[in-house]
Image (tube, rainbow, N blue to C red; front, side, top):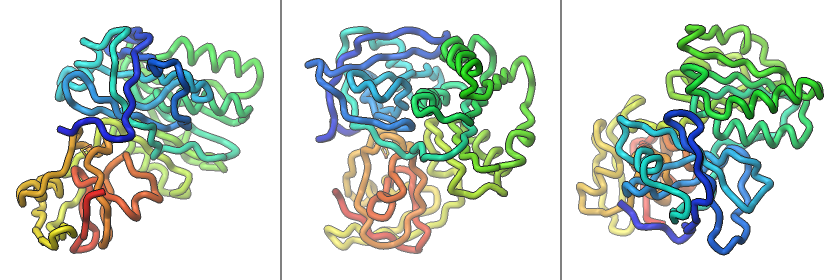
Length: 325
Ligand code: FES
């Protein structure tokens, strides 16, 4: 586990409310009442939870208001305790250490948008909706999937937002899909004709895989995916590769079923880590040479040239050279 990093900030919890039986919203502010770092829709912060685990959560409120960040946390009873400790233990007045906002799910300027959220995946999508409404973008469609009406965070607020905009003629109606009620959703009619839309998807990996397969005819630059369940280091095809630790020149082999991080630790090279799922940003290393197979949700496209997250990422080339920050 790592301690807080240099860019970390201590904030105070100024509000919490249960949005559903499992999802709790937290409002975070600076203790001195000052402004928080500017964030854009799609950004997330990493929170050092009471359990000691670091967890990444999307910012979900109006990001033009820099007096507060708002996150929503789904209590995962089967998880490693990070979300459980947030929902069960964190109350108003508590302090939390958070990272600076990072954004690997940026909202690009486009004439039209199709926004797809599944369950807690609504959090970055909600911030995008608020921003697009402020910009007066006319062609925005939201598809919001969840298990049931009771399991749908922000449903009433979104319904109001969309209802208001229907009157304004600014937005198309929201499509709500409750899996327990409606069964499987047929995505094809929504995706068949890309037009000039950009697609934003925040939901679990199976949904992303399905939508990726159905958007093969879309321009890749118009399809944007976010998955905060974390990315498994063993989810893709893993090949062994050589890894050079630049400070010592030592070269180790990373076997196919071992992460870069574990291989480094096995060689006596200690790298700070926390989430082990490519979401918190703690384990970041400099990428000196070689082509990485990036599997994290932390690094932006431009950062991927120079950095790598060894807890999940691997190599496309047979050899990588890395160094500490
Ligand atoms: S340990 Fe969190 S991104 Fe690697």
